[in-house]
Image (cartoon, rainbow, N blue to C red; front, top):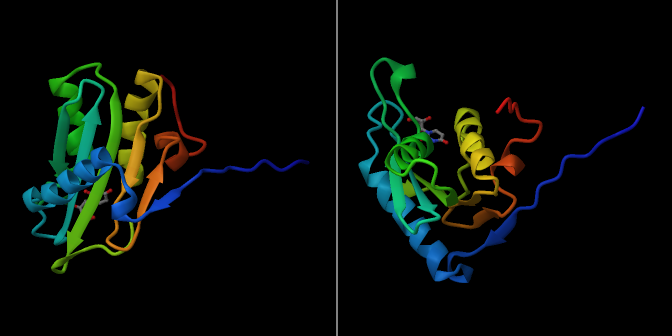
Length: 157
Ligand code: THU
């Protein structure tokens, strides 16, 4: 038998250490939480995607009384980005969440379904989508892309 290791590098930043581009993307993800419709969970998530063409698309979670019909912030943004600019690679994705009157102190990571959906766009583009997970205490940056968030992923495409 032999062992194999799965590794992923997380770079931890404070907000002030970020580039202006990254600060802007995080600010837009935070702002997008205001457009979340989350009367059931009261967990407001915002996402902002910087595309290769310089456009930034934001999204927020949208819930529904028929629970599975709702959508996460990340997929709202990713599907809209792809619907508006088909085939344009996603360069960076920032995520923030706001609940009980404040932004989460620790970075909030995308759910499994969002990771799978984002992975497909990353794979199509052939280069990593940098991921910035906002927490008011610290910010996690994954330069390796979505594949680092979803090791041993299913990929038929
Ligand atoms: N949610 C997101 O928008 N993104 C995630 O990555 C995790 C969860 C939403 C779904 C639901 O509206 C609420 O947060 C609580 O789970």
